Length: 220
Ligand SMILES: C[S@@+](CC[C@H](N)C(=O)[O-])C[C@H]1O[C@@H](n2cnc3c(N)ncnc32)[C@H](O)[C@@H]1O
Image (cartoon, rainbow, N blue to C red; front, side, top):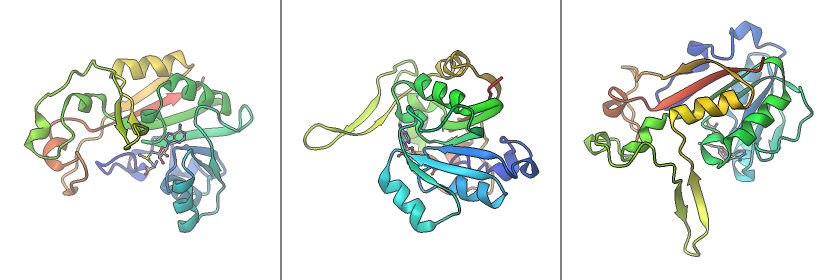
């Protein structure tokens, strides 16, 4: 699943035709509970699920799957050059790092020539709107161009959640400057069947403004 709209890989085929996934080495970045790796393994691919959070990987372990789990930072990948055919990430790692080019360069290094990176992030336009599912989430309340990160702190003032904003142009430049060719930028439309509300995502907003941006990149 690429995002809350419900666009899934069966429908989107952004990693390529499903029959070609068989035997492919795939790295899932910011895997969380490794839902994508579980689906990839079922297609006959050979996924590796990576996340910086040990707690998230415990969930992945509990649910299970025939693939390795790796606890590491996406900015320092513990793999040899050219280890993977594909790298995928559904809202993993990239929205949460201050230096996305560091991650993208690492991804390029571990991909084989001709390999593909597909990653989804919150659509940058959402930054300008309150993160509310109702009508209050439809009025611009902040500058789209303000790159100050969103930070939540605990009682001691330690950052416990940080999300970094990049404009659409920033993301395109990050991808290109890191040695990728951008072959598609998918903005999933909210489908009629999806009636669920989750956080700031809702049918009301989804029908009017994009919520997810999926970047499809090739390492030439
Ligand atoms: C919004 S969750 C997405 C999880 C999963 N991909 C999904 O679709 O449900 C983001 C994940 O990225 C991980 N993450 C954040 N920063 C990271 C980093 N620097 N390196 C690796 N993983 C990271 C988080 O621990 C979290 O599991």
